[in-house]
Image (tube, rainbow, N blue to C red; front, side, top):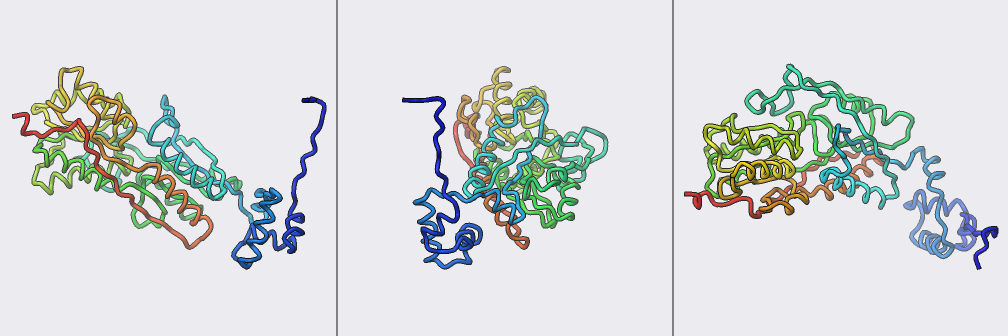
Length: 374
C-alpha cells in the first residue's frame, strides 16, 4: 500500500564498495574509469564486473573537475528571424547526429543561439569564388562574436553551424587557441577543423543529370553567397556547364534565402526571362518546393514544361508532387562524424580533421528527357 509519508532509503554503491568487491584499491577503481589504459585488462574487467553487479556509476562531474574539463560540448546555431530553427530539416538532422555521438561518448550538448552580423550593403564580399558575375547581391561582412561561448569554461569546445564563409572572427578564434570546428563551411589553409558535404560534386552531378537528359538552358536558384555551400554549388554548376561546352549566362542565376517563399517568388523571375529555361537546378529542396508551387500556379507543368532538381533530399522532396529529383546530403552522418572527430580533437591538441563527405544524386519524377518535349 502506498504511503505518502514513508521515506524509502535507497542504497547507493560507492567507489570503496567496488574496490572491496573487486579486491583492489580505491585508486585503482578511479584509474579504471578515468584512465583505463593505465590498468591491466584483467584488473579492468574485475572492476567493471564489480561495478555492474553493484550498479555503481562514477561521479562524472567530480571526475571532470579533477581533469580540468566540463564534459560539455557547445553547439552554436544561427538565430534567424521568423524561422523555427529546430524544425528546419537541415538543423534537425545535423543536431540529431551530433547529439547521438556526444551522448555515446558521455558528453553533454549545450545549445547556443547566435545572432549573425551580416547585412546587405554596397561593399562586395570577397569570399572565395564570389564575383559580380556569379550572384545578384552584395554584402557587408562583420566579424561574429563567437568568443563569448568559450569564456568561463562552460564548454570544452564548440561545434559551429551556419557560419559565414571566411568570417574573420573564425580566424581570430583559431589564433586564440579555442577548440572549435565548422560544419558545412571551411576556410582553406587555415588549419581550422571541419566536416562538410562535397557541394561542388553534388552541384556538378545535379546539372550533369539535366545535361544528360538533353537540357541546355539550365537556370540555377542558389542560396545567399555569404555561405560557403552556396559558393561551392555555384562552382559545381559552372563546372558542369564548362565541361559540356554550355555557355554560362548570369541572367540564368538567381539568389534566394533557402526558404520556400524565395523559391515561390523566383518562379515569376524565371518566367519573365526572354528565353524560359527548360530546367532549373535549385540549391535546396525547400526553395525547389516553392518554385514548383509558383510554376504550377502559372500553368507550368513539372517536369513536362520545366524540369527541377533540388538539393538535400529532405522530407519535403517526397511530399510534393511530382516528387523531387534531388541530391542526397547525409546530414545526420555529417553531424555524427563531426562530433566523433571533434571529441578526438578536444582530447588531443595535435589532432586535426578536414573531411568532405560525398553526396549522391537521387532521381525521381521532377526531371524528364528534353527530347520528349519536341
